[in-house]
Length: 272
Image (tube, rainbow, N blue to C red; front, side, top):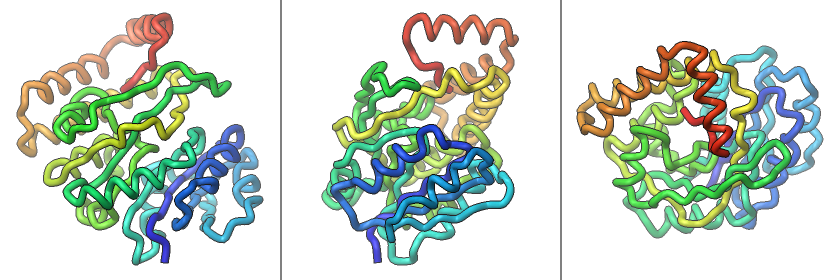
């Protein structure tokens, strides 16, 4: 049985899907299964995924679009019983060949760590590197980062399967913030860290995210942070984070557009 299960839902991802899948299949660590969930794509993505001839791929097609969180939980339900670690991947990102090798080695040597991300590069639609992000790998710093912008980019995550089962997977109530909610629930009782090495290219999707979606992201993030506060995380940082997200969630559309323009002018990513 494989030691790692890689889960990657996708929807109308034809432009980058082949590149993303190949980056996983070409990992130096090869003892994994690769669960691909086509969430009702209409752009030929399913045919691209079906074209890979690799016995590690498990491809499932949903006849209609169910959304990212349901697709993630569907993928988790398909993970083999004896798998030790579960890794995430997105259909428009790219993993360096040594990513899984480094993350498995880290988790093997740090038994007190529940899951691990990595440093990453932000790339544009043409694969041009915009900047490199190197957050602190200290578990306390990772936990604090969840009050603002998580230092663990979701497609870089590898987590122990037992931990995922214990926290109950992804919560469908928190669309657009399901990743932060998951990490917050894990860090209530467990530690998360980072491999201090650039192992992922994360695609900057800000140009394709609508202003309406940005508002929904902020509302969902605000609810997630509020729940964390209600569960005992009453640090000043988290309280300020709730206030900041609430302010952004109910900001007029015109102000959000100006904010987006300023972020782009500075060459930064408009993050939730």
